[in-house]
Length: 260
Image: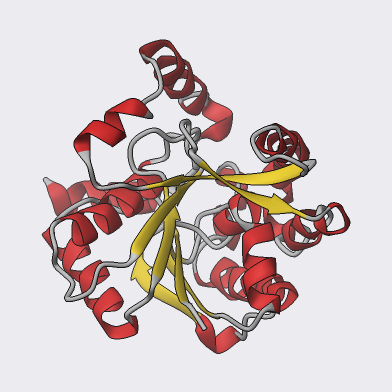
């Protein structure tokens, strides 16, 4: 069976972007590991929820992710947390080395990660995760070269067809993340339309999940870049306060001291 590693910055990212592929692979017995860079410990809106953020929220979100993975047929022991702080994932040598070490340990045939350049949601945790994974594979830091796919991409070039009877899998997986209902309640309404658009690219299928296959070739990469207007619009939308994570002020002050 093929070995897969799915990277995500936060515990709910895969349920929005990859639920149908995960469900398909899990049901067919492929070896799948979930690598969550953070535990999403600050994933609640506004300071009024600060008392719930941190370790308390972590325990809940770990269980939510495990419940979602159970739908795919992925055991809890196949979920790995890389130990980074929600909202503070930086692209540096330490992070790149950590990703390389993880991939050397598990030696996947296929890696799936958040888009590192042309993403719909311009969150630096997501972007830096994708960029680190790309760097590790592209620079030959591994003895083997796994195939790499990006999700949440503005310029998909590969589509995974979804059987009509499986389209509700995304709703079931998203519903596991009850602490994120403040944002998931409307994001879930984007899942089916995006899969309908994907289905237009696959003959004979109504739904399909979009991905960008990485060719590691500058010429081919240039062919699939979105235009500047689209990139600018996405940057603007991602900057709207509703989409910005709300971190406890004490944590922000502590981080500022460390970097100053």
